[in-house]
Length: 90
Image (cartoon, rainbow, N blue to C red; front, side, top):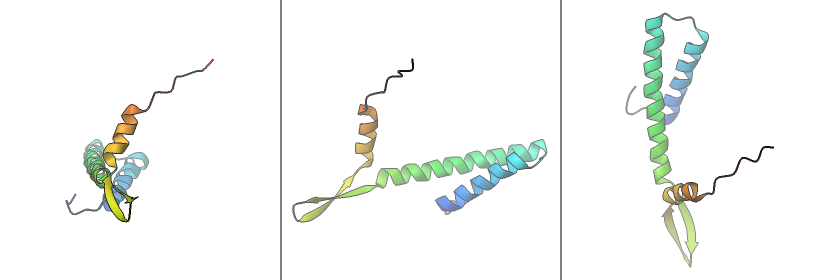
């Protein structure tokens, strides 16, 4: 896996690894190699998503000028402030 790999390339590779593991009758060593590769691809994709999440910007109109606002911290704060729903199965 190359550091220059795009998220889309890594995700496609991860899908291919998963398909091979699910559909093919592979020797144990090959399955283990693919599993390790899948874990690395998953971690790469997660890191890319976290990086993008942290840089999301929201344009808001304040007066006559636009202001960039980092919404990732607002989103995380909303997630922690949100009240938990009670399970009301009867």
